[in-house]
Amino acid sequence: QVQLVQSGAEVRRPGASVKVSCKASGYTFSSSDINWVRQASGQGLEWIGWMNPNNGNTGYAQKFQGRVTMTRDTSITTAYMELSSLRFEDTAVYYCARGKVWFDPWGQGTLVSVSS
Amino acid sequence: QSALTQPRSVSGSLGQSVTISCTGTSSDVGGYNYVSWYQQHPGKAPKLIIYDVTKRPSGVPDHFSGSKSGNTASLTISGLQAEDEADYYCCSYAGTYTWVFGGGTKLTVL
Image (cartoon, rainbow over all chains, first blue to last red; front, top):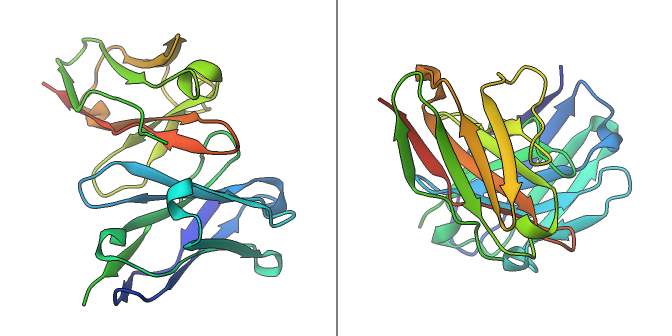
């Protein structure tokens, strides 16, 4: 079955960077975009950006431009989302999700905590 | 982009129907037929329940339905069941390869 499995929880200091991975299985990795979405505790979903695993093209929400980088390693069918210059308000669960126009399925989520 | 507008909460009794609205602009909801809806139970990842405004993925019960009029999309849940109690989010294409979510609606089944 189609599955996305994400890396474990991370704790970072303000100003640091974090890189979250998302391993895909059960389908042809290069055939579907990977999107990243985050959710702060008790808050709604916020779209971060997308990546085309076939050619590496990306698109980011304006809010995250300059701080986020999405990459992939096709040899291990894994997508990555790196967020830099972390702030306290970046504390959230980060999800990867497959799809170009709708998102299905989603990974289990990765908690990124920014704490001093 | 600004988040799409959803009611913070709705409620309905078992067996009744509820509708959750999702209001955007002509630059997102009104401009494209790319509205999707997601169900999220506490502590779980979101799950796709409606895509392309009205379509249901395989395995999603048919008491979920979607529609759109102008800049407002709607999710209707008929014959409410206890397991429908969850948070619901709409999402729309917003042009130039960007997407925007609604703020989410908490559904309480009485």
